[in-house]
Image 1 (spheres, rainbow, N blue to C red):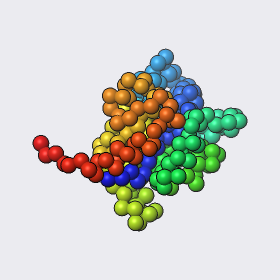
Image 2: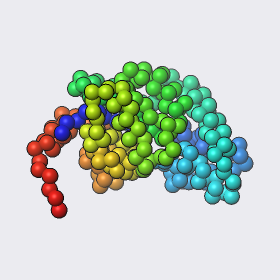
Image 3: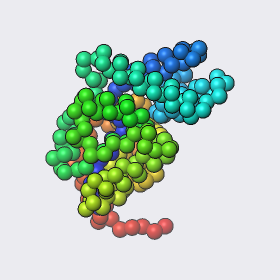
Image 4: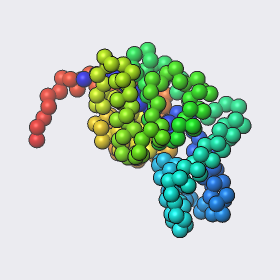
Length: 241
């Protein structure tokens, strides 16, 4: 077996924008005459899609939440996200991202993004940071009906890479996922992908329990060692219990 593709999560792996999302969720609730309680964002929204988190926040306050209403709120949030990023001279991308991407491309690995964020938000960052040329596929929350820990986003990324490169014959177990949350890790694991956990959002020890590799920072990723593990798996016999 060989490593053929690396699939990145977006928020918490590519860009450190959680404070912006919290601020915008709080603002949306205020506009709806609601208040975000202290610590509630971390409990309800952290590591989840905006759609899921915002829905639960509204339902817990007795609001009737239709998909149309929820989509309107999320579109408002996306507009606010764009305005907030315009105020920032330099995007808060995580250190080491460019170097890691360079290493992966030099090894001819295919790259993809798999995010529960809506495409408007992903595209703003990808285009402004000039990342579009590096990621052959981008799967956003708009593209799938379910969110992590469901594996649909990762499965769609594999399908799209095979469409982009018909000779690749990519299988999920030939992919490496880079994640920062338990939900994202679980989604990749359900497709038998190996996972690198980056301790940007959750503590190292928490991710270490459920990841194949865990790093404090993206630039700590030892790609050569990971590739060796993938290649060695070809030599290991299948054990039937």
